[in-house]
Image (tube, rainbow, N blue to C red; front, side, top):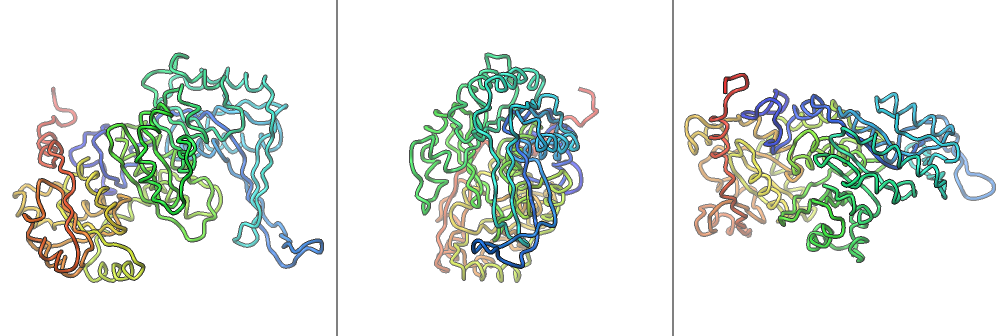
Length: 511
């Protein structure tokens, strides 16, 4: 029910049962305003743009006449900015220089409402700054002004700030980009034995996640290359990276001592690895020409603020992917605000495609060599069984089409008091899942007429069926496709969720 308040049946203040994205979620997270501390390598990003009209005499290099200088918080500071933009109460704990770049960075953070009390500013330290030089809309050069050999006294001063910085926090994010500031002293200050509250969510975003195993993080977020490094292996760039790392989940979890590992795959989204063997995926919305920076920081911020607000881990991942999709379509270093994310999710409302539009898009997908997966259902009150099933369906091909029963069809199947959510709301929530490419609606008792038009490569069905039991199977096979029966989750059903909702007392009722 995008944009219309809380979800049907979820009590006010309760987000732990939310399984799909809707436009009311970002505001609900901001209302909770979780307290989050970022401990990490804060940087300053410079974006200098100008015009190119000539080449220099000394070398075949273009001359950029600078017309504009923009600055933004980078690294761990960008994570803090995104957290604040999404409604969190944020403290920044890091080490920067008492120089022009450091003072500019502090002003940017202060202006965004980030508490910089624990941002150590030391005259013996230089603030890391990354300058991008743009000619027109093209990045021509990046200049990294980094400073090696941090003074031991400055690192000790930073470590001394950590206990106060994390006190009372709902979550702590460690952003370790390898500057040397976050060494043994800082790690010791974040270990469980140092006094960090056991209920505090700890998320580690580090080049070397294994180095933080002593902190026993709840979530670590290596990219594919960093995960491969932890595993002591090299990834074939032509391989399915998600499958490769998923096959070695136990080793990754053991090496990082994390409760969950989220491997980021850039244009291919992310994969969640947990001890229970489930591999939840998100799919990105990549851009052809990437000029954005910091989408990974936005992802980590979105994941943490959603989890700290009480959303399930898989839903938090989907929300984080949506936030990253917002900023990756913008030039420069930017943040995703509550309003940005609300608008992004709102666009999925009423997004069910008419059949003629769906077929046109699928024709283009087929021409590009993409395999089409089709599935269907009511998806009335979304729950974990649904999201796991749709995730599995997506992995059977390249394009996932979800056909929803219209409201009359749901009543015929489920009874006169269903659906709980009308078709516009159901379509909007399903369309917002990153694993879903297209949503359409059908009004027939079976999917056979749509199957004959779509001609899917794979027809996916969840439940305790066999292919022989389905009346859609002959139509699928006649089109050259195959039927795939996905996992049945007997303890997860919409009927059970609806019974629990209807038996729960309304807010304000006497116990």
